[in-house]
Image 1 (cartoon, rainbow, N blue to C red):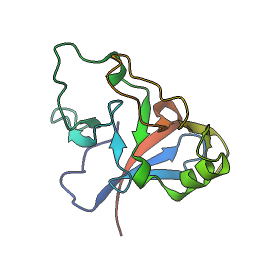
Image 2: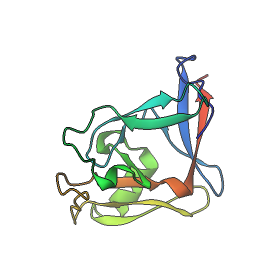
Image 3: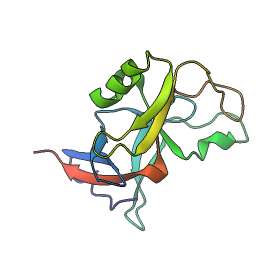
Image 4: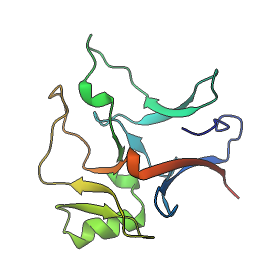
Length: 144
């Protein structure tokens, strides 16, 4: 989590960087981030700690939440993926593969357009492209 200055500065971006080499991988809002159910995520600030987090923009309808909502990955909308991810996907003919950091070649995520995995509640198929939270850091940066 990073300090939340996002709402006070309209030109702020949340940049996701490789934890190993700090290479910029993608940014929000240029890349749309999704929940495991394919719902767009939005930035929310905790007023007490001023920490920034991503939360579902749509509330869950049923009484018990899906266990997959407490996720270890960041799903990225296919139409807004960065060019380096598109290059990785094209390399593997839009099937499945690992996303390697363009800066240091560390694994930062993966994609799978073949399997169609379901979330824990079996309601939806998870989005195919994701980054792993433990492999990336978030940083708030202003646009120049």
